[in-house]
Amino acid sequence: MPPQSTADEPRLSRRRLLGWGLGGAAVVVVAAASGFELVSHDVLPGKQTLDELDGACSVSSPPLVFPTTGTSISGTFFSRARATEVGYTIAYPPGHGPGSALPLIVMLHGFGADHTNALADMTPAQAVALEVDGHPLPPMAMVTVDGGGGYWNPHPGDDPLGMVVDELIPMCRERGLGVAPQKIGTMGISMGGYGAILLAEKYPDLVTAVAAISPAIWTTYDEARAANAGAYASLDAFRADDAVTHVRALDGKPVRIASGTDDPFHPGVVALAGVVPSSTTVVVSSGCHTDPFFVSQEPPSLQFLGRHLT
Image: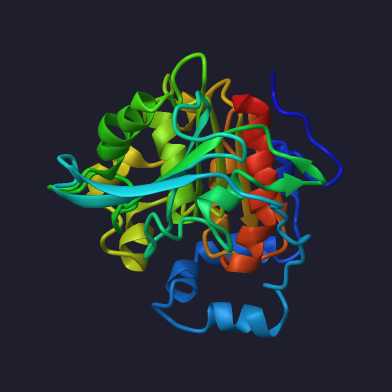
């Protein structure tokens, strides 16, 4: 059953999103066709600074509330898929710990981050202990892991998504997390938001629900290469792992995508929203590709996953 919308979280149909001006969003979409990515990704600097000066990046949200936290376990393992040592953290909700059978959220970090700072302004233990609208989240565990800077898609000698599927999730399942009937969800911010969507598209039978905040979506390989030459190894790699092209793999799956209208990746999210299945909730509001927007969207994203994983 498709997720229900609320007054605070409007669900946008594909037609409505594409036809709605959204204030500055109409300008954003037009700009994307005329070199927008060159400005917004600092090939030509200054876009985000201007947004911050004119208030476009000002986003208000209630304070994060987590009265107590549960146990966290951090460690490392050698990843054959990534050919390197990777760090990870597993966080349990309050009242639970090693040995608990729980649903699992795989939280993928953004570009330049790692397993220690995959979330904005909180730790994994705080995330699963969060109270939203005065109510605790249902019990869920969360795992974060080092995925490098390759946008969670395979590069020569480095396959971070393979690491997640073939090494990280089996390790978590050995600990009782995400083992049927318990479910697995994916979540991520920016590069991690794209990775969360990609993971569900590539492994639809593994992932039950997705929450992506400001996902780093490009619509062409040239856009991606101009903004970040290391995002994809080749044109063929982009075609194989383009989230827009393969979105039908999400049919019937609850997916929540949140984007700010002044986010440089917003045109890509608009393109994605034009083809997503009806089971997808797209949330568009004012904001940039900055922590204030990320923080404002973390509680409803976790609440969304809690509804569909428990």
